[in-house]
Length: 231
Image (cartoon, rainbow, N blue to C red; front, side):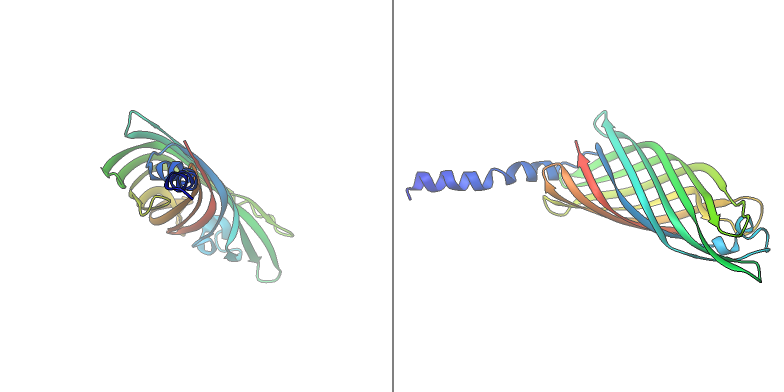
């Protein structure tokens, strides 16, 4: 094979990967994503809302559901964003005589605005302000009339960093505060504030499509697995 033919063959092999590298290296916030989410809500067993102020004894276990989120970048470094998730939680309830199994849903969403500062071509710091909502709903336990639905909202904030470890692998870490992150165990309120720490990873197997996974530790701990479409 001539040198010219070898160069043409190499160009054919490399060309499909070039757009992938360019697309994956872009740290733009504009995207849509969704997938499976699982998690565990701490302290439900001590919540007066759920125990009917001590009438019932509870045990909970983790469950799963779905999530969707997205963001739109404008004015170079600004972006609007939104997230929604709904995940079921297993529940065992007893009144001291009868014991039965059931479940309830944990619904959380937030919307807000953020600002990103590109530290380098492969790293960006960002900050966000948000309006957060959390709800414990649809408590379903056969044989028990448990009216324990609870809904609350408040302000949230987040700071984090995105790093393009390679052209196809992006890592993101954050610390965020939310006014509705912890189930209250005393008093009439249902939720209290919490600070959460999270880590996310994205692998771009196509120019603008990535497998994503994330873990966020707090009083409501979650992990997810899904797909992101970047624009």
